[in-house]
Length: 230
Image 1: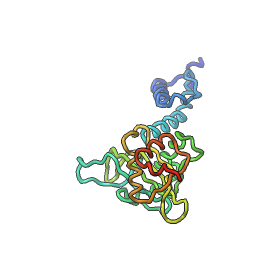
Image 2 (image 1 turned 45 degrees about the vertical axis):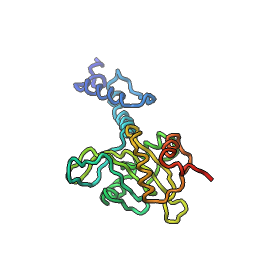
Image 3 (image 1 turned 60 degrees about the vertical axis):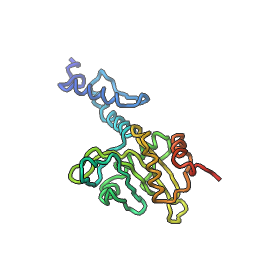
Image 4 (image 1 turned 60 degrees about the horizontal axis):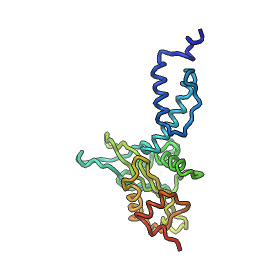
């Protein structure tokens, strides 16, 4: 009789188990789940956790979803990548994104952890195993790849970022603290584009340690002088 209980069976049994299997398929091989596949109640309990883990894996691979204001004059000119500069210290944002984008990231109604930069920073932290992710400080150079435009708003992914700080408080941002590109977007020149965009704006002279092997390789190809030590 107990097998007829909704704990074990449901009219949605097939779709629920299909979603459960699909979410597990997105997770990296090292991820573990505690659910009992035979007990439907455990499968259902597992869904929220699996979705959270799967979303983290998707963000690490593709970059978090984001929206920002913008327009194009011709569909043939639809951009593949947009680089924007966000001064988290001063609360300003460069063109082409417009101030509305920064407002959504820093509004009292929006938790920092729920924003695209914070989600990307957390993916970076998990990959590098730093103690803490970059926070809402410094100047961020952000690479975003749009996939749609609706009513003056781009929809896309934050696919890379670099964070710079003014460590000596002289008003100049000289120090590269963090740089990250989503896994699916690597080896496309995005990291180099972020550094070149930063050097067009700021007198970057140093890189904060520790530096990952990927960071060493990137700087060695696009900014070798930053790796030189006295």
